[in-house]
Image (cartoon, rainbow, N blue to C red; front, side):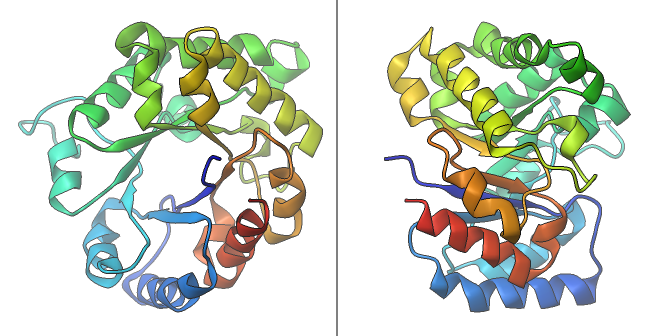
Length: 253
């Protein structure tokens, strides 16, 4: 049985005051969650606050991105070792905003995945298609290419210690959500693609949905057999909404 994971991606949001309030809400609410793993990925500058407030709780924290380079003359970048210095467990790689806004291609994302694992961080590998790609009927081709980049570089066993998040780009921050059937179809395809290389890795791989999941639609999405939780954006910024999703994940087990 795969343990559900609900991970909050705060993106470039937050202030000292709002983050303090959110972390307090997370600590207060985690006692109601018994089966689902709950994690948060704040902006880099708020990771020390997360570490200070969440240490000793069941909630791990992580980064939203990392560099492929070791510490050195790379202004504005964050090394894997810096994330581990502050107790990070997870790191997001290949988020659609990194791919579309900052030009990160499949090869670079795969390298970031490898660097994260070498530092004993658990990568959350984001994959997904744009609206144009979906309308062209190439969703599976796009997702396969993104998954294969990691397998080709590191081997399928590298996925055993990571997480995959399917995020249809057309459903991120738009309020539009893939139907449960659309989401399940792609999640099942991802698992099948990995199973072509290793059935055991595929069966144990947690695949999250990452496109406008909310408390109101979380239960219906996570009722599907291949949806193992969510990578949550906007709803992760309010503890009440976030735990509404976590409770749906709890009930799905």
